[in-house]
Length: 180
Image (cartoon, rainbow, N blue to C red; front, side):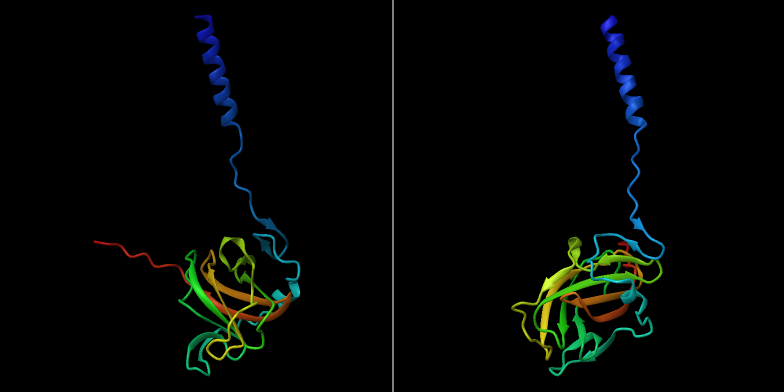
């Protein structure tokens, strides 16, 4: 009987101790201006973020092969569906003036000042080595992309660590349809 009471007492102590541990989720690193979610590439600077022209939105244009692309004509564009928050999409990036090297894709949310990788799984970069010149662009690379929040985003694209171009676009909430 004494061993049964000791067993119950130990069990109660364990339950009390385990109930006192914190299960708080770690918040992203917070600076005065920018909230950093992942390990941002070292070449991304505050100056790059400060120089974003939020009025220069990505627009639809046609390439020399008549392909419909969204972006900045004769510089950077994508073919793919409109991006919705927290939804993975496949995009084909098109580069004019860039046909080799490493392209890095950095998302910056205007309202929350958070920085995220645009590519899924926390990846930041894709190699353009072996990329093909399609739709009149000098280089192209496919990728799966996702941004976590709706709102206005700037996608800063770097070529071998140098800012190449910026796409400014609105990411909408995914509309859920109910089946009746």
